[in-house]
Image (cartoon, rainbow, N blue to C red; front, side):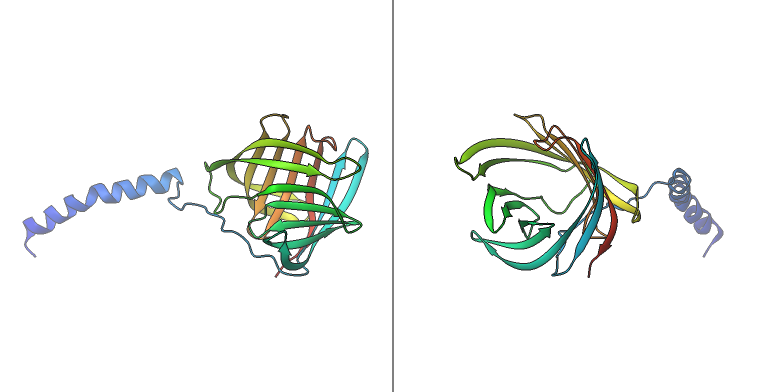
Length: 208
């Protein structure tokens, strides 16, 4: 290669080298963080330490099985004496006490996968409470993936997507920190719910 051609090549590559060096100095990453929909399996379990106005508590949520509930491919999840059904997209379908359905969501309020910071969606759901008198009420919720951040919990420190949910009519607010590493939530915070304000942090988990 002639001297003039070599010099021209060096000058052509120099701006690229400077640009790469500048990006490295800024510590910026071009990697886009995504969380794909998890697949739960029987015996996957998450234990949380929680607190609300009435005091501290511990709850373990355990996947019992996959099945079909009211036409939806779903997971049956045990939480103490209560059973829940969630769609494969982790949308709330129903809550059962003593084998009886006490609350349903029509349609289920699915999470929208994959998660990515800045993503947002909304859902209008009719909630049906069973009892001596059936109660129905429609609520519209707005969801937003706010951040991808490090969260410290009793079970360890995890990278998690912070997802916020707000009900327009009631003003209920919920925040979920979802970690792909545990296939579930490592932290949950809520305010204005019928059960009052509460916060839960992951203290142990077992997933496959």
